[in-house]
Image (tube, rainbow, N blue to C red; front, side, top):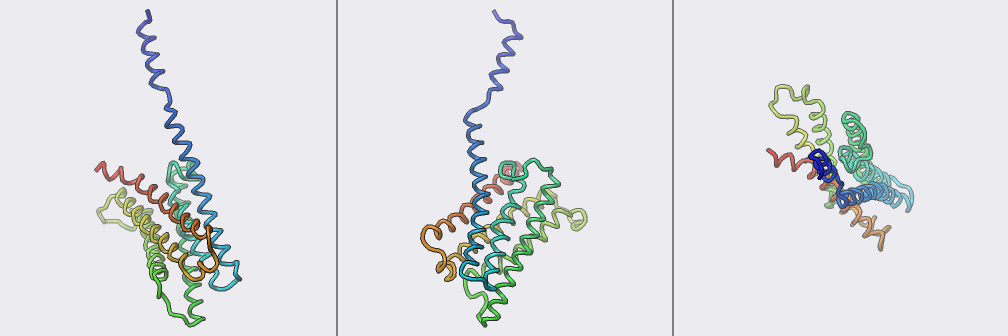
Length: 238
């Protein structure tokens, strides 16, 4: 007959057994996220290659800077805080915040350079501005990116910039993350609309064309999942 202490020990061992299905699921998630990081780098490189392959021109800088800004820097900046998706998961919170604002600030600078390139290119060719959905959503997206950058500064320096305003820091972070999600979806929609332009359809065809659109849709779903999974549970607890 076993003694009470031994029975208790057996129960503890059984309770601590790992769930093989959960471990397998986590491993699959890790592989999926690594593929996602690879896809965003591949997509950015492909867009840059497409912009320069026909020949260097002022226009080539537009898709180059925009792809770097939104498809790579903004994507990585948002995933910086993900416990499953971040490339720097072991960094401290403060280090992640610093890396996040560096990515986002550099991204906004690249977006402004990309906007300047297309505006000057159209000016030289005496073409009208913002006559397509790609152009209209593009200028809205860049303006929204600047606004979101200011929002990030308010979150980071809330005690100084928002002194006297009664708003919780947790709420500020939620608003900033939600606005960031809207911004990234806008950027993805604008990018896909750009893939319907004459320049892109003339230089990218067949499987490469459809795969590039699928890659944009994939990374938009990854960001949507990241933001909703991080903040929806907090909202539901209120």
